[in-house]
Image (cartoon, rainbow, N blue to C red; front, side):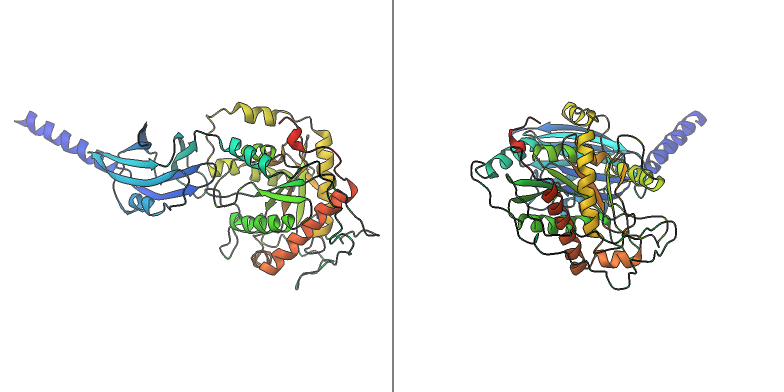
Length: 441
């Protein structure tokens, strides 16, 4: 009798222990994008899972082991919209005791990638579900770019708009551009304006890749009033595209056009697939001191960083892959070929010239954090054949600058300055080569 009671007691303990280990999700998030759709399940402990696909119709089935039903998991279906390019419906139900089944009804055949992320920053354990189309998005981009190009045999018109007028720098209210507000952190500089009007002659259409920093799972830096860097950079990127598209013989293309995560290396790959002539990465970073202020421009460095601050910032930006959620087990040979060529001295020299032109124009709108282009090992600037710069528009961690970054009028002034810098660069370094569309990637 005692033996039987002992077995019952042990069984009860085992059941109680199993119940205590049941996983409760703390958050679910859905990030649709043109390239792929991402689903994130977050919990205080790792989520065990199994998955398989079905066809006719296409479905992805994910069994979540030990996960409890609840409002957080149910909320996932409510995040789905009709515009999601890959997911048509989400169904959730108990499959068997201790197993919740998640079924994704798909709009097209997909290649699923599932992986776990350890706790980092504001996040706990994350199970990431990436749904990639069977037809690579890069192939679609290439076809769209080729079909949208004008007839290169037609001689382009000379570009004179806005270049024959001197730039009028505007110092925002409350900003003393001649006096740093944070000794040792800010260097003020007056913008350099051309002594005489310049007129750019463009041999062909110029494609400018515009990269809105961060996105999706990676919010970037945060402001004291609740602003997220990813939202500000996207707003600026969209305005920058509109302004560039309004220029004769220029077109802007967005690396991301919504709130979703794009790995740093993939941003480089997309820019090259788009045959971009320039790559502009837009950011609004934070610093440990809220009085840090000013705009900066960075280029890639083949060696060390030009300052401790530049090195710190590059590491912080490169860590975006860890925060946004990169599957490090996936080896992409095309990405490796793209990033392996770091003998790009000529491209870095062009990037420095571009960066200087943009920095001088931005100096007419905002105080400059540094009066020269800095360099560091930014992963997002490693296109071996595209002049690339990273623009830190302002410090979102500075309450005054955060407010201005959210001001549409200030955004417009900033965008005009960036475009003027791009035009000033091409005025001194006109494109005479044939289109990158004829060049092998």
